[in-house]
Length: 422
Length: 182
Image (tube, rainbow over the protein chains, first blue to last red):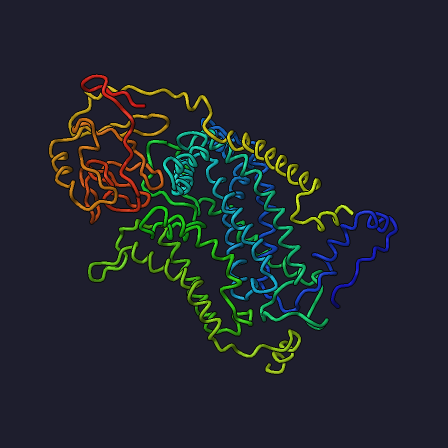
């Protein structure tokens, strides 16, 4: 049942395959030759959905570039021209901007699936790292893309985010030196827009490269599964094609419906209306906030009392995922058999959503009216503490102490047991 | 053969590993030299650097008002301070501060405050709240909406995440109420 070798029957195909074995590579990576655990659930759909979104973003993005002008005097107008005059211009723009949000939703679920089912654990650490590199590249790409329309949020988002790097001011003039280098001027301006455009075009292709490495690394230990145990015998596996190509395609059809609802009926719901106002370099809008997918990190930044410490904490909140495989020492991968870990995981997810909400409110705002009142700042500090405690205290401690539930002997055995119970 | 030579002579200075090291050093230096233009082209270009200084006549600014002028693409706040504001600021000289500075260091002439209108936290332009800040903390100067940094009537950071007082623009008086910025 598991992997069988690719042997083309057609002579012409065989002739080609002998010279460039690319069909065999596809056969073994995403075809019948890739033996996959038989028990993957729909949470495993999100990897291929992320791949779909990457391709979608590249295609719509290339179309947008055909109508866009990366110059501060024309950028905003060229987007309006695209929206009003170009045939289906609105469709490509909305598909691209909603697409960015969809890409992040899918990737966040993909990452959290990996955390819940222990997909980062040995022997998949390098695959995990590559995934995080993809995520970091996505953040950079998403941020620079948001600057390109040159609206108020574009400009002020770019100002705030680039200024983060000014926190690295270890000797006189270093912070400003870094900023002037990033901007190509004394503030965010035309040189900044042009370099962001250049890099926004480049990075997706770098992401494609890292995705290939990510999939390559996947094919060494092969897919994890909801039980978190290794797939051993042929009874544990089914070929990727047709089983998971079909399952992924079925999931994709649902995903496309949701994507289409946003593109056609709610195209601006995830954006900030302030970005339909052209950039004004002397007027900061009253509520500068990043796109929703950065809000939890923005809340962490706002929670810290000093600038440098805030910036370092924010970077640490993402980089900490790189050492996750060594913070969790449990021999059992899947949180299915680790009730305490599962509990703290869901608390982490809720805490993350709460941080996202805190990202949208002013730190001094009183959110709980008890006693003197509890400010968003205080709650932000508590949520930030839990965020880091989850990694640095809870996981190392729980993974050592927790009594795990019995893990089935094999994937096939768990299927048989389930049948017996039913 | 050649690899054997390297292993056998490890730690010794032979003609061969001398050549390896010098070649590598020249190679690395060459790559570094080639990388510099790639980095330096990101820095501000000559036309940006050449942006000259500006002269501002402050006499039309009424007492208790602020104007914003642009210098090097940055907003400059010029405020005509009232005697009450100056008195309040001087009285606060000894109050606990994030970046302590007596009022006298904030302005060459006490009634004219010339500062760069950019929050030292992450670069937003803080709006004027001399009429009073609409929250619990009151410093009646500028309040940055991005992350809640409060500046007092002398542009000193009093509360919030910003590390420094509003930066002062480099300026000098050409006459009684005319300054040259830059």
